Length: 128
Image (cartoon, rainbow, N blue to C red):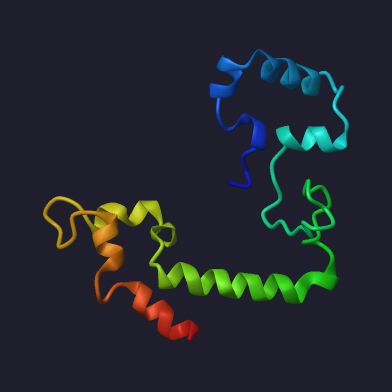
């Protein structure tokens, strides 16, 4: 979830590891460098790294126009795969109660996504 910082999505580590709270305090006091601060800041929506050259994933290449073809290819492949496996993440949560549940044809979101005639088949025809 790009809108959530890496370090603030869960309180669990803060309760079991005292150094997490210390690190967060360090950040709040402005004592972290740019790279350390990223842990507490919202993530970019799209990230692309050259992991053999950048194993710690520091230099995000997604804004570099030189990599646009690669990003387009990866985006298309992700779309294809999500539709192929009928990933339920494509279904907006506000629609859940309309599509499945008690008294409906499908009892679960999984049943709905796997059924014939859902919008997955319409999306598949559009993309392929």
